[in-house]
Image (cartoon, rainbow, N blue to C red; front, top):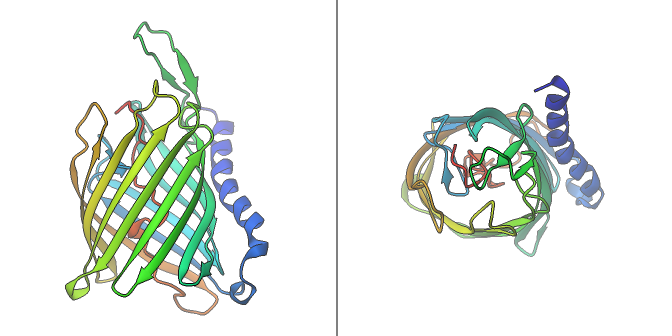
Length: 283
C-alpha cells in the first residue's frame, strides 16, 4: 500500500479524536478547564477479543495508547496489531468524548475512528466464484453515548455505539453494552457485562450477543485481570475464551503535578477490546 494511504489513515484516526475535542471544548465546565493530565500505557492480553469475537492470530495481543484528559474532555490515540482476512495491519483508533457529571451521574458523548493505515480493500465473495460481490475500505467511524453511576462499592454503566457505515462499507450498525462492577475482598473487584450487536445488512454480519465476567486487581504498579467471555448467536468458530491481561500506565504530564484521576484503562473505559471488529470472516 502506498505511503499516501498510510498517512491518510493516521490523519483520519488522530483527526477524528481531536476534532471532536475542539468541537466539544467550549461546553466543558470552566472551573475544571485548567486541569489536565497526559498519560501513556502499554499492555497485553493472552487472547485479543472485540465485542466477544476472539482473535485467531497475534496472540498474546499487545497494545499501547496516549490519552489526554482536560476538564470534562477526554481524547486519545490507541494502537495495536490486528489480523483481518489474512492480512496483518496496525489498528489505530482516535477517540474523543465530553464527559460531564450531573447529580452523581457521569454522561458521555463523543466519537471514534478506526483506521487501518496499511490495509487493502476488504472484499466479499458470497458464491465463491472468484468475483467480489462487494468491496469497501476497512476504516469506520462510530458515535457513542453513555451514562455511568457510581455506588458505594461499585458502579453501573450503559453505552451505545452507532456507525453510519460499518466495516468494509457494509451499512449502518449499532452496539449496546451494559456493565456492572463490585468491589470484593483484598482490593479485588468483579465485573460482568453483556452487549448486543445489530446490523442493517445481514449479508455481511450476524446479529449476536456477547458477555463476559472477570476479576481485576491492581498490584506492584500493574493492572491485571482474568476474564471469561463468549458470544451467543454467531455461527462459525467458538468464541469461548479465558483471557489473562496486564497493563502499565503512567502520567506523562499533569497540571497538578500528580495523577488527577485513577486511569482505569485495563478496564477499557471506551470499550475497544482488541481483535477483528466483529466481522463474520474469522481470519
